[in-house]
Structures are given as C-alpha cells and as structure tokens.
Amino acid sequence: MDFEQIGRFERINVVGTSGSGKSTFAREFAELLNLPFYEMDQLFWKSDWHESSDNELFRKVHEMTSRSRWVLDGNYTRTIPVKWKQVQLVIWLDPFFLRTVLRVTKRTIYRSFTQEEICPGTGNRESLRKAFLSRDSIIWWAITTYRNNRKKYSSIISSPVYSHICFIRLNSQTGVTSFLKGLREVAEQSHAPEPAEPFSTGGSPPSAQ
Image (cartoon, rainbow, N blue to C red):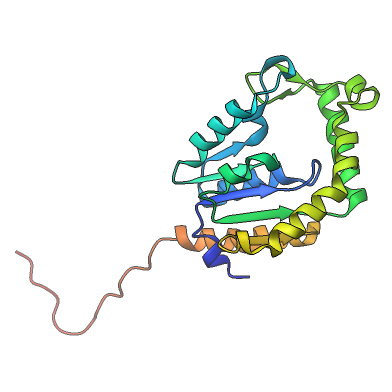
C-alpha cells in the first residue's frame, strides 16, 4: 500500500455499517493528516432526533464537500452523487458481522449510561429503551443493514462509474491497525525537520569582522 500517495489525499470519505468503527478511524485519520473532520450524522440530525429533509441534507453536504480539504465520516447512500463529486479516497471499514454487532451494542449501552450527547448541540442521547425496545434501535439497524451494505459497497468498488475514486477496504482490526501505523509513519516523516547542511571543514574559516 502506497502510504505516501494516501497521505497526499485531501478529500476522504470513511464508510461502513454502524459499529464498524468508522468514526474513531476517521477522526484519527483526519488528525494524522491534519485535515478537518466532519460527520454525516451531525449534518443530518436535528434536536430531539428530528431528521433533516433530503434538500436540507444535500445542501449541507454540498457546502461541506465544496471545501478543499476534509475527512467525512458516514454513509447516507442517497448523498453519493453530492458527497463523492470531489472525493479522492473512500475507505470502507468492513469487519466481520459479530464484531460489528458487539461493538455497536457495547457503544450503545455505554452511551445510554453516560448520557453522552450524540451530535453535539442537538441534545440527542441514547437510551436502553430505544436501543432494545424500539424499531429505531441502532443495534437492530446495524444487524439488518450489514449484508446490504456489503453488497452495495462491493458493487460500487467494481463499478466503472466510480473508477476515478481510490477505494480501500479494511476488513479486520489488524488491517485497520496496520493501516494507521503506516499512515502515522508517513505523517511523522513529513513533519520531521530537514537535516542541517553539514559544516564544511575545508579551507579557512571566515575572519571576524
């Protein structure tokens, strides 16, 4: 994998089923490359879990992706014609099913107890009732969309329509860790100070004025 080339990309979308770890990955990716980080959920959700209309969402996505540099976390397939208009790299996190479900379950239970705000500024929070006793359960969403997401992104990657986009698929935690390690090494090298020019001992030193 050419990490130097990856390090030159400035418009990246990280996708994957809920619980795939894409938000954590995308944040670290953005931090390593010193790129602005954005979340599709932040663009979509309003206060009290009210949804943005498609027109509102498309406008927000267009405004954000019209900028020159960004890492965007999230799917929302209907926005692909907008969000991928300028994208250079799409990273698909595709861990196996059980890991995905366990991760989203653990995360949801943790957020339910801590009452961590989802999408800062909205006041939205998880609850155990919503997680386990509601049709809007994010856990159930992850379970029911997992297979369709795999089919969708497998098809997209092989489609000539998107041949101008670089796609990377990471389907294990080992792969994710290795990828971030390689990217971190490139980032550290790019920020390392240039070595000083060696002092020449040949000839006479300049005389003091």
